[in-house]
Length: 115
Length: 112
Image (cartoon, rainbow over all chains, first blue to last red):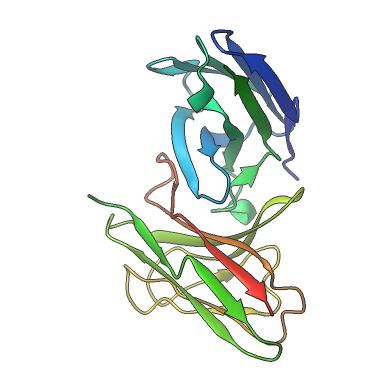
């Protein structure tokens, strides 16, 4: 069964520092990996989607890498701002038939950026 | 703008009551999903539907029911059989295997 782990569970950094969030998964049979942001009491906002054939995706200050063979993805947020404070979730979409549609989530990394 | 609308934002249920959470999307996505989120437990899949008039149980379907009569709508009913329904419920949709998921803003259900 696919398991997704996010380390660290919580992270506090001063404004301006770069953020590095890690996601690991046990089964490399995935279509893609998606990073989300969740603010308290809100839904999930998609940040980046990386296909299994891709190595990285970039959007503004965000960059996500994917190493499918080692089961790892890293989300980099450059020059962090207090508005980046949120919980960040990674999720993988398995290719196995019995896991269709069952996006597997990590537990998330709670980020606090202090002014 | 295309997206997913969940309503209501907050819902209170009395013991023994059934309640229905609404989820509507205008993204023309084929697949729709319901997740439950509890503190410290992450997101767990309740039900999903790949096409109209078809749906499958997820990992925690007991005490819940769904219908998919229209492509745009995937309502979730929390029945009295669900013993611990207090949670944050999230609806999502997707199209094809190569695309990502889009989530709604969630419904917080509380038992009173």
